Amino acid sequence: MKKAFGPLAALVGVMFVAAPFVVANAPYESTMGLVQKIFYFHVPSWFAMFTAIGICGVASLYHLFKNSPKADRLAEAAGELAVLFGLMGLVTGPLWGRKSWGVWWQWDAKLTIALLLEMTFISGILVRKYGGPGSDKLAAAVGIFGLAVTPFVYEAVNIWRTIHPLTSVVPTLSAAMAGPFWFCVSAFMLLLVVLLTLRVNLGARQAALDELYLAQED
Amino acid sequence: MFFRTAWLVLRKDIAIEAKSFEVLTTTLFFAVACVLIFAFAFVKEGRPVEDAAAGILWIAIAFSGTLALGRTFERERYGETLRALLLAPAPRAALYVGKLLGMLALLAIAEALLAPMVALMFQAALFSRPLLLVGLLAGGTLGFCAVGTLFAAMLVRARSRDVLLPILLYPIIIPVIIAGVRGTAALLSTPPDDATAIMWLGILGAFDTVFLTLSLWTFEPLMTE
Image (cartoon, rainbow over the protein chains, first blue to last red):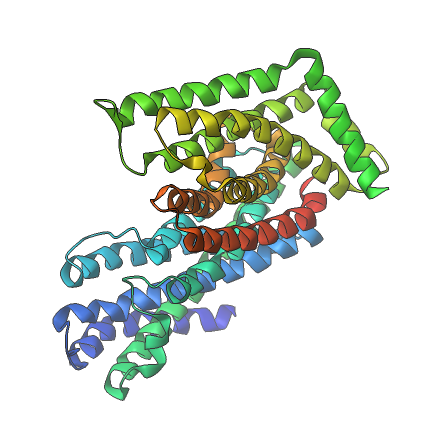
């Protein structure tokens, strides 16, 4: 993993430099025109958030039942990244909505639950910061419940007919749009992997440092 | 064994509460105060804002429920009695169920007071479909208490637990509150929209199942130090 990290980080850098050009070359959507291009960053950021939530939830479960500090660090990193990518989705979403729906925000099922998920994972960060000793277990509980609510978000648009486009739109993209879309998705996923690795390593170093301090005091 | 333990925990909580009525009276008073504040905010020139009643009812339940959760477990923390309970050779999930039943009973009393009060003050026809209303209240309260009891129990040994309880609890249980509010609002429309209320009742049931299963499953490892 260590050897692969440098090239991987470089690849992500190149992909994000190339992404605007790829997106610019994609065809215009028939009804929304230029505005629809935000889709290439909006949807991948949610993909990345859901992946981060999945990693956080599974790692939290593992930590809770097996008491593994390693899994805890992974859950912490993934929880923070879920907030980061969620924030990207919550910024790009209203920008798109303002142009195509005429309003910045709409209280419909998908938007509401997405906002709640974001808040859930922010609360996970807060409990780690202010919960004192033992807060890793508390944050694990938040991660697990966050993961449990996620399917409702994904299904929300399909169950409740809302203003938000259906999730089934992705497989029906025309080839000219699907190419740039999956390019952006892979860029976001790789970015997630790179950031996750960085954050887990940082956590591991912090833990090692804490251990050294404790050894020094003894 | 399981249900006997749960029943013993519940009976213990009722016995303690019956001595002072501390949590019950403070919770009820707080709930009434909550509704009064909303009454001043949402009743203009004698006419309540449309659809406000359902939201007010559920906000009062959620706020007073949070207060009661905090108080109940603060009492356990004071005497270090939660640790004693956890040391007992009994299934941990049974302790959770006992605590949960206590919270449900407390909130049921609060709701029995709140629902008529909201109906009266906001001229809301809450009782046009009594069975559906009871179903919505029961479903919503179960979802709220299932997560609330777990989080309040695990926060007992955390720092700044008073602040953290609502911070952790609300984002997760807001879907339950939304389902409760929308379902109750459907009952308040004229004529009452039974189909919509039943749909929200089903969603509440789904949330309750998920939350209760997760809580029963994670209570044991969460309470292990």
